[in-house]
Amino acid sequence: MIKIARKNLVWWAVTLAVAFLLVQVSCDLYLPTITSDLIDKGIAKNDTAYIWQQGIKMMLVSVIGLVAAGGNVYFASTQAMKVGQKLRSQMFSKVVNFASREFTDFGDASLITRTTNDIVQIQNVMVTILRMMLQSPIMLIAAGVLAFNREARLTKVFLISLPILAICVIVIMYFAVPLFKSIQKKTDRINLVFREGLTGVRVIRAFNQDQFEQDRFDGANQDYTKTAMKAYTLVSFMFPVMTLILSGTNIGIIWLGGHLIADMQMQVGNLVAFMTYATQILMSFMMLSMVFVFVPRASASAARINEVLTRPSSVSDVPVEQQQQFDATQPASLTFKDVAFKYRGAEKNALTAVNFAAHAGQTVAIIGGTGSGKSTLVNLIPRLFNHDQGEILVNGRSIDQVAQHDLHDLISITQQKAVLFKGTIRSNLQYGYEQATDEVMWRALEIAQAKTFVEESGGLDAVVEQNGGNFSGGQRQRLAIARTIIKPASIYVFDDSFSALDFKTDAQLRLALKQDQQVQQAVTVIVAQRVSTVADADLILVLEDGQVVGQGTHQELKATNATYRQIIESQIQEGDGAHA
Ligand SMILES: Nc1ncnc2c1ncn2[C@@H]1O[C@H](COP(=O)(O)OP(=O)(O)OP(=O)(O)O)[C@@H](O)[C@H]1O
Image (cartoon, rainbow, N blue to C red):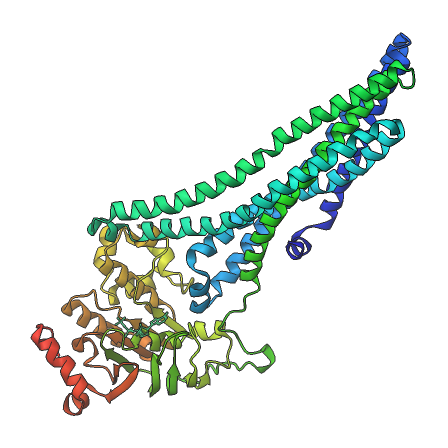
């Protein structure tokens, strides 16, 4: 919490909030003195002029107190909101730079809860701190001293009421604070189930699992509600307890004060002032204890936010002074030297001893069964993960030795699952290359065999809904391919991107791709399951269980490689191999 406050609060605004607060507290403390004088010197002596004078004074002090309270609330709230804004922005920029490992560790749902709910907790507690946490101790001490000065004999009432209040507050806090902490985790769970329900809604319906998912969500929801209800019920006891103790204290003060007044040892004004101070003391005490309920809860949120903000990305750049630059005159090339990679926690390597080299204008195709390591291999090129052994070179530079930003500039990739953003076809196509002209975009759409349906949808300005929801899977994939082609790059990667295309379109696309000037100067990496897609590649890698069990051209592999032949045979049986 302190770390977040120190980093994000603007100190002049905080100083103003505190200054306003001090003025407000001084006014609140001065009012009982005026009341006391008004009663003892004005009302008791029937001095109308004095009553008017004190009345106006009272009004002035109240107005000043009110303005000061407004000033304090304004600066406290704007500061808290700005802290929230800065934290959200810091979280976003941190998370977009995370590697896959960090996403797995935190989980998407938790990252969303941390960026929303946890930051709201911090915001709320910042306001509380800038108001109550400072106001309460000052008020408590000052009202205590003033009450003691006014009538020391009445302060013995506090010897009973304050310890009772303290015990009640401690008991309530003891049970409430852990509950507040666990509310955060339960919010994570609700978000997780809700997110899964949303993203998997079609599968849920297709498998008639609506009720199962509803029950799962209700379970998480109920769990959260029960905990929240327990926590807030406990806190709600504070107010009746407080009222009871306050009333008891006032009865004690009136009883003791009544005797003193009867014995002519005290004036009525003093008693009224003392009672106001007593209320201020007890209220401040309670406010302070509320702070102790909210601060631990916000501290738990702060710890969860700091955990994200301080987490180094598992894929990081070498120090700037050691970084190498790409040589723009070097032709495109991609080399894997004895590369191995293992997912954290996995028993065996996802890739072992991968060796190949490709040069500008060449196409490398990777084929293999499900789970053989094809996507893992291509994801190592832009460093979505760090390879554990060996070396990967792009345009002659080891990818570990260059800045990731420079590396990503040279790579254009279509992921296995085509991702589109809400906007227009134009905004999606220009995502990787802002300067792309309409002509360039139409050319890319033509290569990606997407021109016809884009024209029918209303052209480049046609709307793309969230996740490209208003396009079919195949159309999304073609748009993603077009986006990849538009970006000038040294390495083009298509991870199983042609699988949703029919044979004819697949062949047309690859032919058009081969004829594209930009692509001709680059290395193209195609991941595919179909032999027909890889057959005309310059180099085919056959992957099995993370190992390259064969590499060469289609004809070479067909003649010498048993695994490749098996793949062809299995596809002939399915009717696909006819195209090989
Ligand atoms: N994030 C991950 N954590 C742990 N293991 C993983 C992870 N991603 C993939 N794997 C494992 O690594 C192996 C290779 O996966 P990969 O996704 O590279 O296969 P693939 O050949 O692309 O499969 P497919 O054709 O089905 O897309 C698989 O055994 C898979 O279970």
